Length: 591
Image (cartoon, rainbow, N blue to C red; front, side, top):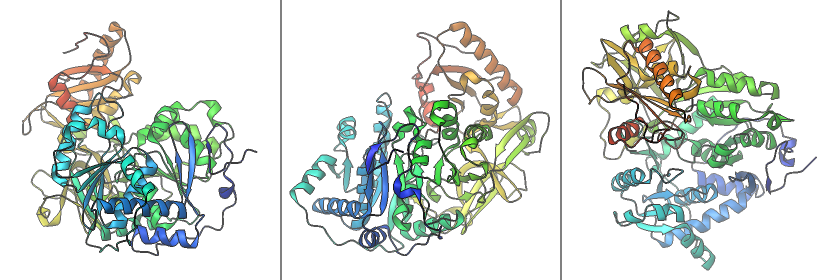
């Protein structure tokens, strides 16, 4: 059998890494230090060769970083940043794509007591103009001391380098400073009320991300709750292909390993995009037990892997598959389970979670070992009466996201802010200690309740989220969540790669002006004409009225957030500007 070493390449039918073949008894995880840097330094001192992170690049090559080596790199990186005057309380923007560099820079900020924010970028350059405009808003809000970027980021953001007082520093300049020698400052011990980092909202409905300040005390409390809720073990290994930012893979795959001493495998998101099978290969090779992904990620993996990719894979150690980040179709989880159950994956590993930037993505979570609740309701009653009545003549499936984490509570309210009963559709609000706040925002009103911008209902004290409040379609007295129409349209297999229902009506309008936008690969005009007619018919059946317009666009033509979630506000802006590219040259399909 092939042996995996500290560097190599993940291939089909990989061997299990020698250090993961025989695991000690599974003891419960516990946190012994009050910050990530203290925990990392203690691990490097006591177990310098402890496996810390496995970085997998887009070509499938991996490199293992152990505790002592990683801490040494973080310390030198902190020294280089200190030469630029970075210190406690300073804000930094990290525009770094390489996972190892991003992990190092993030921990170096913590070493100095600074608060970082990760600012990603589009995969291609087609949407760079909008990306740069959003970046201006983030930089103005944050007023950072340093913007640390790689060469690609710097080249794409050139015209905006001087919009703030920040020092723009390229990664290669930091590496050169480290090579020339730097003095390593002593690590800072943060207070619980100091800002640990900033999380960015997705901007899926507001049109632009907003920075949310997260305090150290809230971060530690939330991670302790998550580890306890998931029954964390010393033998666990986290495997993630999500982008490294606080709403996706950073907390579970970087901060949990740092604070609790468990290793993680960090697969470059591009590697998963081009070869989804690399995810189960990594889980097998390093005996991964925990992962998190949006529902669509599980579905894409199930559809994209070939039978040859599955030979000899063993996923029996995969005990927790967190599902979050977007509205999830129950069918997406079904497809993953049926594909990988013969290889040891168990449906009870699925656990749904929900949360925004303010709650670090962890406002609710399902019970461990209990698959997400699937609630089959009458779509017509939901639209006409605002009630999620079980079953009915027009059934649609909604997935529960569990109950609130300790210290948080949720409620569903009507348009007047009054709590509503079980199965009544309304606005979702959260309250509790540790919720982050946008920069410059005051305390939440209404007795401390935070409006999430989402709508949903409750069943047996479990939350079911139905989308954003701005996505409620108001037509002829009905209020239909756009996601209900989108799920009905998913019956058309030709548009499963991307479909979104957009309301073109201005805010406050009494009646919605719905437009269906979907991605399609066909180059045949007759096929598209027939598909548009099918879309109109299904939409009218669910909503009670045909859409105002149906707009097909080319595949990958819809803007998405880093985790793959469609950005509705951006779709609306592109729709109004005529910037959505049709699948056929010169094609313009309107009702």
